[in-house]
Image (cartoon, rainbow, N blue to C red; front, side, top):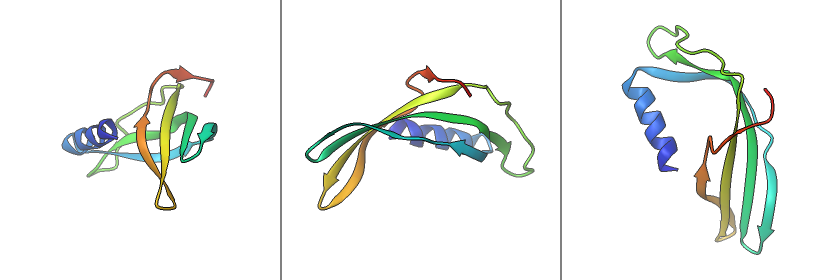
Length: 94
């Protein structure tokens, strides 16, 4: 989760925002009692960086899809993300 926060902070410092569509299709990899593991081959080709002030496009589609993994833990009746990693590897086709 810290890596995501750091990435968003860096974008903000550079005057960038992300806009567009993300195509997500998460899959349950394992489920054991109060812990679940989920993976998604995220298609971010339509989600690009833009200038925060002008809205001008500052990015190009990479054509790549990125594997994201998350661990969820059931705490007091709610499923919470307790660990996440994005761009673990390139996967699939965009």
